[in-house]
Image (cartoon, rainbow, N blue to C red; front, side, top):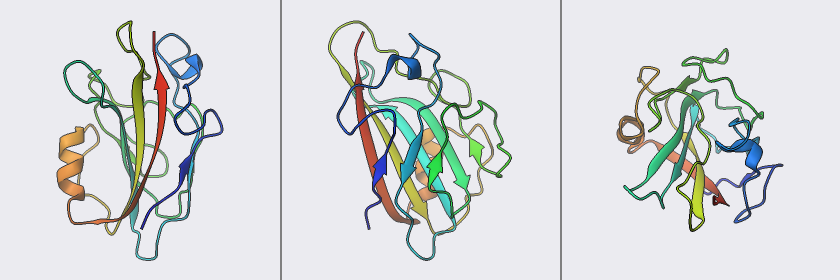
Length: 153
């Protein structure tokens, strides 16, 4: 099953406003997605840049969102554990929470926000890296969807 992911800040394939980048306020954009399928126990998110010079660069890791969650407000707090019980992982910036697009000058980069509906809550500590999340999710993804924006400096 595919989740439909969107943002009120930018359309699929369009430029991410500077407000959500290292050149702006560096806050997370608002995201929304279609309702997850029956059996969903938690929601996870990975935000990354597949066009980074050294390979995919992780900008956001978020997991164990309650299963009824279908949106994230703008400017999610950069704290390891959120009031909902969700946890944020460590990005390639070396910190938890969202880190906005900050590509080297030149060609545009793609920024992918992938939402996963999972059949379990993950036994991962806050601060887990993207690789740990991907391993923990393996075999437990009921549905997923992606929104891609671009940004260049």
